[in-house]
Length: 324
Image (cartoon, rainbow, N blue to C red):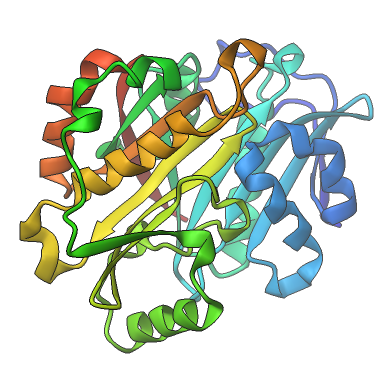
């Protein structure tokens, strides 16, 4: 395992951080990473199993420890091609060790590992308006990341709140189309979708139905058929025990004028509302988050005009990319 030791990892001009005691940073393998698993989002924890794949591993993890105890974790996903852009999936410092340069040290170490591994750049994506947003901005500025740009809209709501929306019963998928649970799609059809995308890409990779397959939510991830063909989907993920994320909604280009995306989203929401236990008893699907990517302007308008009164928050998701 790679390992470095540092007493003060602050770059020039970071005087507001308290000096760190001796802090060790090292590249983690699968066994070591289990001690740090609670320091990343549940949706990313399955990826820690991939850390022992050596040079073939699609992820890299850097752990920080103080006095022999885990103090922080940085996790990044590697690009498929040399010179490509890696993505910083998460970075976390234990509350007792914040403002000591630990996050700065982990990110510095991560950038070095990625650079030596052939990555050309590192992307960071995060949500505005959250408790740690300013700390993330500050960290990335110190590491030389350029100003952020908006990439998507993120909403958060409760099942009980969104259930009050009157439009839940007004928008239905037309009868000419069939809706099915994504979990019931045969593996052969999934393989055919992948092959068609490889031959001639027809959906954006950010809306792929194959993202984070290990945690796709079976309850309300849906597919859309027309005369036997798959022409769309609404893919959700369980990001925490009590939270479903509405990740990727897509309708094939030749069907986009039929207004199918919003009814498909609503059908997925209905299934979350109608299925599950009593919220008072800790219903495991009581919360929801949703992501509307920048190009989906009609969906963004629907969210702002019709969903906003029934959600807890609406924030921009932003990204910044630094050349390594």
